[in-house]
Image (cartoon, rainbow, N blue to C red; front, side, top):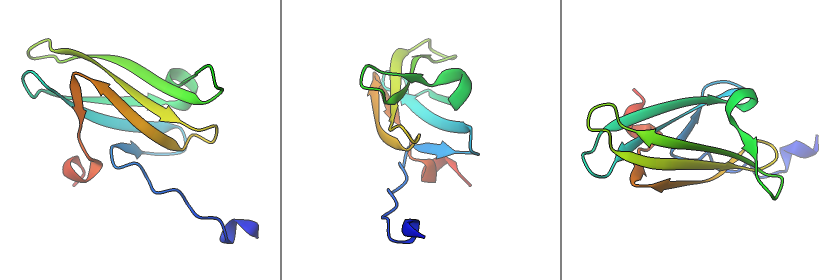
Length: 99
């Protein structure tokens, strides 16, 4: 009943949740613009940081030009995306790659 009055956090524009366990994100490498997609799950890929929040960190190597980078997706304790960070990559908004 009380959940009717809670404000729902806006969805992150860069991370798509496919189902209860699965997320997807796409990044573009800065040197050559190669697009790389990652699919990750709560149980297998998301860890816990020092503050007790959940985090997904992954090195990025593009298959065409071997551009290197790293992406990080931050979650709160309820697996709500709270932020994204990238090193040598740019996140692609879900609206651009979802048709």
